[in-house]
Structures are given as C-alpha cells and as structure tokens.
Length: 499
Image (cartoon, rainbow, N blue to C red; front, side, top):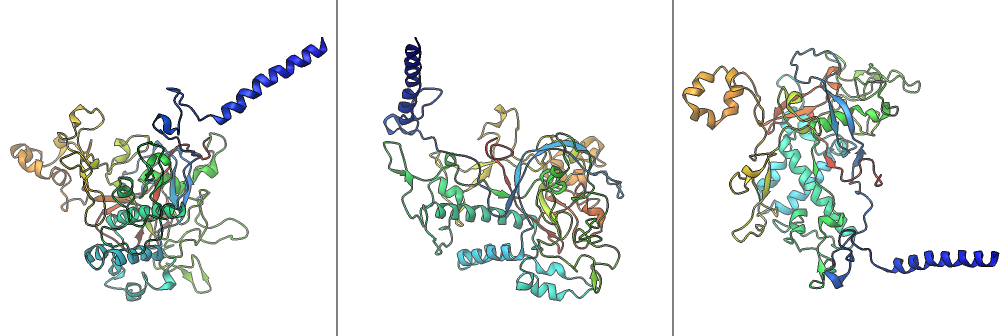
C-alpha cells in the first residue's frame, strides 16, 4: 500500500513537471487569441521584455500623490491668486538641480556646430540675454561679460533665458539623450558631422525620416516581410520628452512631503521645502546657517565678511545648500524657475484637481495630400499644426472642441467694463478678445503669453521661498533672477519596479 502511494506521488510529480518543461520551450501566447508572440510564422507580432522606465540623465523620480496646492500663510499682497486647494499630481521626473551655465553652453555649442553656417538665426535666437544684469544705478558689467561663459560660473544656474528658449532647450535635450541611448544600444555610431536638417530628431527617427549615423540597419524585425526596423515607442527604449514642469508639479516637488508622511497622514505641514518655520538650519552641526540663497533684508545679499550668511552675492552653485526630501536642490532660492502654465489669477478655481494645468494647445502632425507624414522642415523637425475643428472632426468630440484651450472658462464678458462697446462692435471682440477682457498693457499684463514662474531667487525675500507663491512674466522676456529646470513624464507604475 505504501509502495503504491509512493508510486502515485512520483507519477503526479511527473505529470506536473513534464508540462512545465515543454511549456518553457514554447513561445508566449496571447491571452486574447492564443496566437504566439514573437513568432514569424504568424506575422511576427512582438512582445518586448520590459521592466520599467529608465531614469534620464540629471533626473530624480518624484513619487506623486495629493497635496494642498496654494499658499499656507498670510497673503500679504492680497492678490488671492493662490487659494489653497487639494489636488493630485502623478509621479514624474524632475532635474536634481537648475540647468547650469555649462549645460546651456553645451546646447549653444551644438547649435553653432550644426546650424550656424546656414541658419545663424537659430543660434542667435537661443543666446541668453546677458544684458539682463544691467541696472541703471549699479555696476553689474562683470556679470554681463563673464557670468554665462567664464568657468568660474559654469556650475551656476543659467539666467537671461526666456520661457520660449527654455522649451527649445528641453526639446534639444530630448533628442540628444535618445541619440546617446541608441548609440549605447549599438544601433548608432557617434556622428559629429550633423548639419542643418541632417541631425538626429527623435520623432523623425521613429517615423523613418532619419537614417544618418546608423551603425546597423536596425533591430531584427520578426515580420516575415521585413528584415530590420527602427526602434519604436512599443520597444520602451526611447525616453519621453524633457519639458518644463507644470506649476502643480513644481510646487509639489518643492515641498517634498514624502519626508513628512506617516502612512497616509501628513502630521507636519511645511511652510518651506524644509521642516519648520525658520530659514536657518537647526541641526547642531550646521546650526544657524541659512538654508537657501535669498536676500535676508534690505541691502543684505550675503551677510558680513568672515560670516557670510549664504555665501553668495547673486546666484550660487546649483549643489549649494541642502536638498529637500526628494533630493532636489535650490527649490527655495538661487533663481526663480519657469513652469509650463499660462498665468491666470484664478487658475486654482478653474483647473482640474487631477494633474491641474492651464496652457493646452492641441496639435497634430502635418500630413501631405496622400495622407503621409510631411517631410522634415529645414531644421530637421517634424512639422506640426494646430488641430482644426473641421479637418479633425472635433465637433464629434466631447472632451475638447478647439486647438487653443488656454482661455477656457476664462472671465465673464458681462462683467467687463467694455461690455457695451463690445456688444455694439462684436467684430472687435473676436479679433483679440483676451486683450479686451484684461485690458492688456493698460491695467494688466495678463494675456495668453503670461507664464508662471515659481520660487524665490537671490534677490527676493524669504516670503517668495514658500512654494505656493506665484508670479508671472511674458514668455519672451527674461531676467537675471529666473532660470529653469526640466521635467519628464513618468510612464507606468508611480513608484517604480512595476509595483
């Protein structure tokens, strides 16, 4: 009886193990159709091994969540443009530091090498405005001459860059990072002779409009009718775009509340990116030291000789001071920073409470008469156009009806002082409705080109170091105290490793 039971156990074990052995030799099958993945016999539909998104150079993962966006202290300006509101921000990536002068010089060098001979305007358009340092009653010429290019300032944040230039830098950085990824994977060679439209562009490569610099024809294609193919989005190798953070993302990252949570509770709110309500370090090792680079008081940019309170007269190196709980440096000083959003005083009342943002202008890739993607422009970029209500059948959509949604839910015509005049002449209102609404350049500087910038700078008081504060500037203007850092969308799991 015991022998029979033992033999039965062995038989059951074999019945379990043998199918496992044979199944391990089989290709993975679709749970929907039962067809094999990665099998040229049935068309070669591929399933690529994938773990999670690679962290791009210079970035740190910001785990998302809910937080109270807006001010949490007295509104001394009485603008009431940052009323507290609970919102949720998805996980994303953000630069550990501000973009430095040396990083930006790398960008300028590339533009000069690729475009200067035939398109010098591209290089000139990217140059920071070094004249922002000038003041009629101060001697700042040394900064005009040396701040951007001298190696003494190479690790200091770049300034004099407007919002448009910051976006162009983000787009360039995306292509350079994805290009080096393809070189690392053995698909491309270093190709320093790129010029004019013959330069690596991520979208052009994906659409098959860039072939220069390839080391091999591509990766093996399991489609029986093809031999090789380019890397695609489905492979998960190329990174999403570098971009400016949204206002909500920047503010959420600046607070660093991940260091203040106990389970789902946040028992201690923060006024600044550090704990407590003081601007000096309470740690015994560093007690009394200023925690960020800002102006302590009138005429006091740096303290007294022998005991400089923040060791910086204007900006400071980007790794100066202590990082917040996300590992981000200088989120409360050094330079204020551009974000993506168009400024409106009541954005927090209008925006969604999930990934809030104002500034959407929806676009689509331009197609030729045959329905194929247009060839690249003279700079090597894919051509886009704003979505069109008729061409793109937006009337059938429920979530948006036009390309430009910046002024969605914006203002009340009936409360405008020019309402009667506009009703008498509706054509004038259609020409530039927002300028009429806000009386641009008469009583306000708010229009669709007013962009938000966040945080304190080297010339601000501690008041602006509270992440909830917000200011704005026209997108084509720059200053000596506004810089920027890049962000990137997080794809998949919000906390990493697929959990």
